[in-house]
Image 1 (tube, one colour):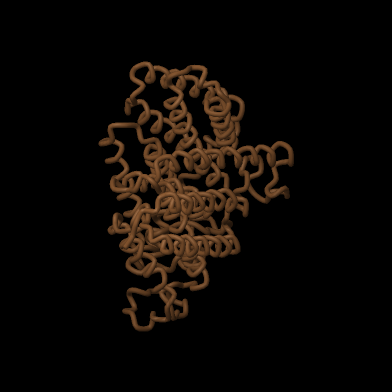
Image 2: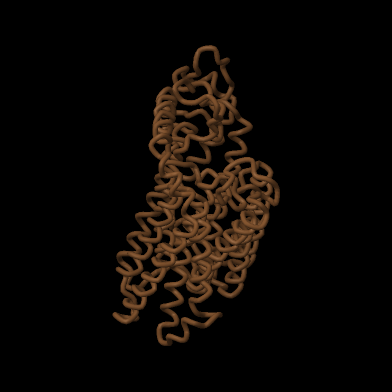
Length: 459
């Protein structure tokens, strides 16, 4: 027989929250978390935490805060996807029709579906990390109060990374890990190697900042002086948000800045349209704050946006080679549309299809489009499964937003972050970098938890 055992389970979920926060804060420090050692260490930590958590829940005879039975479709799709990731590693290629495992002339036949099983195994580890963090965040975020805390803490993680980026850029001569950078000189990259991924990370943090500010305005609506309180007011969150936006502009990432602005506009719109119990007065206070934030953004762009403006002129030239890349990747996908070439094996498999006029001076490690990258790695059917899971999550959270009688701040944050990541994924690979993927998974996990109607209040 199971029972709630609320306080004990609540302590277990709080510990799970801190594990999630620590992992999402520290993984980006390992060059954006884009290193095999970081992946394996992260999986070890998460798996150990998961086993301890499961044993604790069983010993308490307590139910999960968010039972997986509430998410049968998404759990099923994820399970099918992970099973296929494993199948790609097996030596079964010789038993499959030749058309399913086609390789260009001159390339020797392989035993597995994946053209690089070691890379695919490492890539499978990154998927487990993402799903672990999403699951942990979902369990911890099932409690309403804790979900607000997690959104606030994730916001401050982004602020900390923005401050770290400023230190590296201005005090340590534009370095990374306090060493000379080998790429993206003149652009703020923080702990990430890639400025675009760092920009997406900051854009997501900016959304959390707006939600945090709005939530504090709501809880302190009865007192204007409450807004000015350093502990419970909006002064520190506003300063943190400005720091994030300043760092975002300093990345000189054009698409990163675009999705950042889009995320801020979308979040602000959802907050303003969803009238809270504070009434018209609260609405006007939020409008005033929004106007002040827009002024701050304009000032920051004037101070730090010169590099981004200089790069606007190269958009047409870069679009030409990007479209050429997409055409060649799509041709590669359609040559082997059902099986793909193996998770994480894009760099090796693309060399078999790369031809002019696309430059040979660069190593194309990614497809620069996450959707095309998924199709190339896993085929059209299996590569669509992660996209479908995110789409279902977005739809359920939009339904939560439109049907809820009150403002659900974590839901708004999750919707905006999904839209930011989905938009940026059209032209780059931020979601394929572990440091951002885990941050994204934590936010979305909290949002998913908020859509489950029958969740225990004491978890």
